[in-house]
Length: 355
Ligand code: AMP
Ligand code: AMP
Image: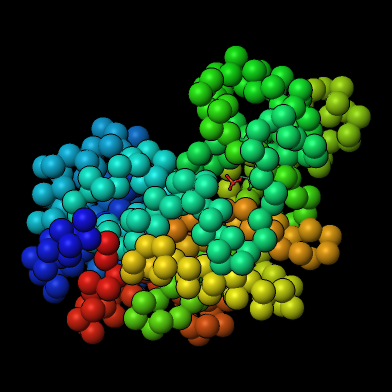
């Protein structure tokens, strides 16, 4: 697969490389960053979101599609290749397309690692091999003996997640979710039951540079979810009113970490990159994110990894404290990606960045 993509890249005119992405998730970040680094930009988006990309003026070219899976259309792919487009994959590529092997356009990143991300078992294997502590996983609902969070496969942005404290509680709530049409019957079987860690959620967005051979911490965020509204309502009112707000992500806040915790976080980023080289050649390329919770003892539990840009990096435009300290200039994930591509072109090492 990678050979085919590298062949396509060989046919590109390196002086006319354009950066493209699907219009959603972190496209503003990606396209602004590409423009800051002097690239032409292409946004492939649906009619309903066109206003966003027109309004911010970050796309030199907007290609309208009727649905995200149109990116699998051969004619559209040919058109993008003719425009020398390198595509930057983000959460919508996983959530709405999935069939990454059918995208015959050079992608910045490692598609094989994106497949590891989609599979929760593989994710756990990756993170555990990197020596990271994860929340305990329960194999079947009958084993639930503490507070757990129930999740489904793929990047669903927290949709349909619920909490359960016992097997009975699990089945009762799962049934209600199916009846309400929030999840499907078959989702229940595929659900992952994870020990719920009560603590502070912090998400770390790193960039691994194959050219500089280093891991950079680019942005740190936490999420803003409807469940956060619960803290504004006294517990007895929550019970009386039968409130069950969800973990559906609505937005993100920037975070700076207590400095003494940084060493642990940076080491975690490095070990994840080391393992990535063993599991999916050539290993990590560009952005990835570790989602963590710190408990009362400041113990770090990592519960997810994303092998691509995450939307939380949108809080880091034009810079986060960390990207500024590192670069001494405005640097954010979209721009960092474009900077690496720029360096790849200059050093004639673009193929090291593409899959
Ligand atoms: P959207 O384009 O907003 O529908 O998002 C595409 C995918 O990325 C969906 O699976 C979303 O749940 C996920 N997503 C979007 N924004 C965020 C965010 N700020 N944090 C985490 N996930 C997100
Ligand atoms: P995810 O889709 O795995 O990124 O999770 C969505 C949200 O669920 C996160 O932003 C957290 O608020 C929460 N969450 C997920 N897993 C855990 C866990 N093991 N412990 C505590 N909170 C969690």
